[in-house]
Length: 622
Image (cartoon, rainbow, N blue to C red; front, top):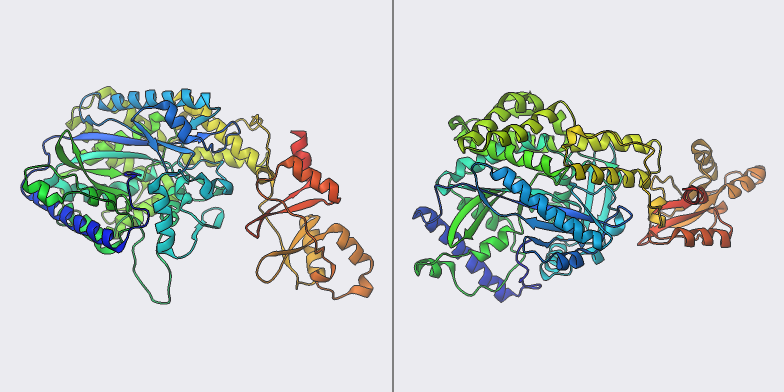
């Protein structure tokens, strides 16, 4: 998330000063490109690894700061949520054994994090979206207490003017509202960096856009969110909605989301991206900057372009243009932000080598992509790939091609050529691209996860299925064998640790009636669905009563006298409820004390589930 020294509530004055620095930074960048002051003639790679922390129950832990302090390594840094951390890997020249060197460093750093996390009764896991994240992990108390994160949360809510809403439809449907940006924290990625010659930035960036859909289609690993089966790479839609500051109105407007693929090809230079972004996106974060980048440049120095980098960090392009200074020398690079974390380090490195080989193996015929492909083809490919992964049919230069065929016939050979051009070790080329090739006839992360989740769901409660799935992912990651070799999860595998809270065992598949419905309708719903408890809502959707089979039996017995009654006439009006965090022991005691068979589960006055004696009896038998 970058610089933490930001203004939490920028004033009109410091915002104006910051924008002046932004304008100076863009002009300074243009001058450096024009005068050849940005490094050329060398290509480097780098990466950032985001990962999740698990507690002993295979759920998100909240101890990132304690683990980070004990790790005490500058490669590690915080992330938005207290159950995530990030590793910044060292850059390497694209040559020889660079990929296996990066893999070894990443493996060593993850092992270091694993040892420290173990001393805090925690584990680490690589996954695009952690299966066991629940609604309670999206509350603001899981936000990492750093100025930048709180500033981002506050300013984005102010810009949006209301809470954040997520609506996703896949095999299942998810519609939920949140009062913070913590949906963003559900996403963990493996971000790739490739240094690019500034003179060739335009064709390189356009090529990065064109290959995004095809590359993503082979690398998906995030099909589940809150127990719902959604997109093959749900992160793409979730991230866009989680930081969407746009507000709707009666006017038809074309405002850009802050998470974006872009809307057109690049034509001029890297500065064109920053000009577009300053034109289309409000400045949200500011900081104090002591010297103009133009003054630094005029004095013969190398400007850091601090304002530009801060603003750029609050706009989430899936392919992000980056400026940096290393060893006193400025450079530009392209950051690939759309690939998920996991399933294993081997899988991630295969994705890295595949993308890098494609980027550097671009044939000259693709130098002028606007003449070959409509930008909307590339953009549509990206979202098709996110939805349907390897089953996608993509558009490539006007032809419809299955993603697997495009990879096998065109892209993997191009990647081999690109890696060979930079003299990458042949064993590394064969190993990493061999993983991509094997994936085409087997599983990627999403396919493996969905197949096993469906199988587990047939035999276990949803919460147990998600825990067992997470446990199996963690176990398989320890082998570092790529996901296409992973075995099926044994459905008899136990999660070991029993559920403890109501939120772990409650049912979220709710049938309800309104207080104005006919009692006869409510009875039929209960009979047809073999349920003994039916929550009753008022016209605003709030819980106002409960029908139990005892009510129904009394109504049926006196039906002749009571024909035509409404639900409100026979329902129980005094309803005892539970919360996510209520312990199962407490819920059981409350049911026993009040002689009731269920507890509707309430979150902020809205019913989000129901827990019954049957649920608790399953728990007691585990």
